[in-house]
Amino acid sequence: MKTRHETESFCNNNPRHPEQNDYACEWPDCDHTGSYRAPRSRDEINSYRWFCLDHIRLVNKSWNYYEGMDDDAVESDRRYDVVGRRPSWKLGTSGPSLNPEFIHDPMHILHGKQDHKPAQCKPVSPPISKDEENAYSVLGIDYPVSTNDLKSRYKKLVKLHHPDANKGSKKSEEKIKKINRAYHILRDASNSRIHTN
Image (tube, helix red, strand yellow):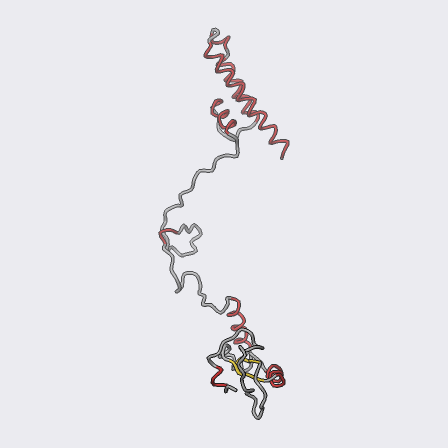
């Protein structure tokens, strides 16, 4: 059987089967095989002592991970577990730093450590179809528009481009067709938005 000092270099994830090696129970005056492992201490949690079944039960009953720690130390240790026992730090102190040239900080969280260039934003296109977009351009108005403004713009353009006012011009006739089509597209779109909301 191996002694407890020979077991320190052994690492096995299964505490009940130490790879067919037999360890002597580390309990004083015990001659049984130590098939069960227990951590040496809170500070040496990955270093094990080996015990037989009867003695591992006694060790487990008496084991207290937090023994010797006050309430603040226990709470600190529990919080350290939350981050998986990895180092952490407050934003902006020690640890890896960020390149301030690539940070837009409108709320000044970084306390002026970034550039003061405004972020480049792409203009947001309105939630309208291509047909509606073309119709707005034909009528010469911008999205969004009220129903009354749409009607008054339509009436103004019809009076301006009506064939009777332009001596029967073919160009005016084509223009009035485009204006009528554009008005109907926008009116129908406006009505469908009203009914879906």
